[in-house]
Length: 76
Image (cartoon, rainbow, N blue to C red):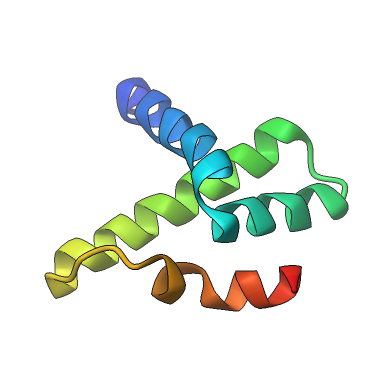
């Protein structure tokens, strides 16, 4: 287990909650499902790592709408 990578992903997720409406909607949805703060934050971090992997694999820039469009529709 890479604790440094985990800590970095958690910090990234905490920042995304304030800067990304899609990440916030995903987090709020998980909290509505009775997930704890830590569980929801880890899920956001995992999703962000997946998004980063996709950006690197496909050599594309991060796009908020593309990354979270299915989550922001839930918030509307």
